[in-house]
Image (cartoon, rainbow over all chains, first blue to last red; front, side, top):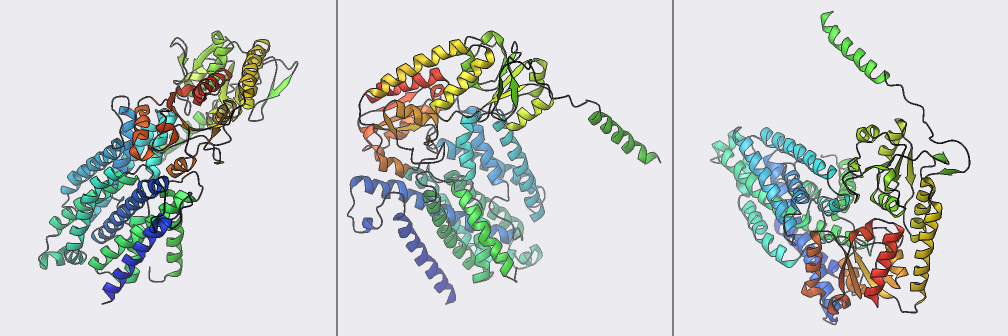
Length: 324
Length: 298
């Protein structure tokens, strides 16, 4: 019963946050859009500028937080997050590669997300190959992820150091995470894989619970730890790759939300995944709205806001909660 | 005992390596006669300076040298300076090769406060190279002063004053034409949309051309402008700084149907401007940019 109350409350809160944030911005429209009394420009601002951003933040928040929740369980590490496995490093390298090939390609709005996704995909493939030699053990996943991240970030810096300063800007903003370049066609492409993958995670929740007991017990209970870990690694990678393609690197959401939610709802995976996802979406929408208005008419990268707000909030929890 | 030999040899060698090159005295080139001027880092230089071999670490300074017809003094430049390849490059603006600079045996190195890193300047000074750092170019006055300063160091003050006088005449002519300011958006990047705030020479270009910079409300020099702000301010002219391949993407961006009602898009007043004019602050680039923009505004 408690389950449904929590999820119901979170959904209600999410809906409220979506509508509240639609009304916030530098143009004074406030809540007239609810009654439909807006002119053409105002309706463009609401439906073409603010709404896609809010939907993007919602999607990325859902994705990163649910992937984080699952990874913390399967890696048995509370510091695990979607970027632990080297995916962010690969995506960053992919986007930075754009600086090298940019004279050769025709750049459209899909180019950067595509390069990011390809980079993420390659690093995942590499980690998959390395860890498959070690039966997808937790240690090999974390180690190879961290090492791949290091290599990628060094290569990123290498490319930066030989590029024209003015060209670096776009990539730098991508690395800081922002939703300003979002549009409906990009959202359509990535929303399907993200939502399907989250649903699979929810369906697999019972098996994830069993896996958290340890490999031996899991095998006794009829779950193949090797197969399951491989599957979950791939699913969370698809989610993270798509999220990175939409927004660049938005940190802290995937680490913080599962943490907070575990304290509220307990360790049951299904409830944890759903509640983390919803709270991640709420948190990211609020952060992106802050990024839009804090130094208006200029904008901040949302990754900076999630880092600061999330970090301080998280520190508070660590200091005042004796259970951690 | 044996196992200590290697560390001792290593440490000794390290000590020798670090200790050997005596830190050279900071030499001030030039004879202490006449005027003393200080650069943007507060180092004083006394005129006249020895200036037969010059390295420029900033494209804008290289351009200034070209305007003053002193290219023959130039022995080094960056990868981004538009110069014949006969003058060798010392690398990028952010990370020029100290080794290459030293081998070129410059009398004087020109750097800028905004473009070059203080670490590069400090390193060169430690090695006894005279580095003159020019201040930021945030307005027409800054551009003018930096140009005159450069001319003074090259001993070309008279020529420089003629250049400035001609340009200021033209500027005052353009300025007197009585017009209502036209709302202008200067676009320096696509994703994210970066423009120029009020404390920049780009803002001055717009103002001198009788325009109103829609990003001038931002106190940041190069703000990431919110798309919403573009709708709110409804620019009548959009100037895209030519970013090579990305320029096509920038033009494409404004064709999106959501921008159809923006005045500049509706009246087909989206133009591309040479990025050098908007990125390399020199008097000639400044007046060219003002002139170009003025043409579009008419």
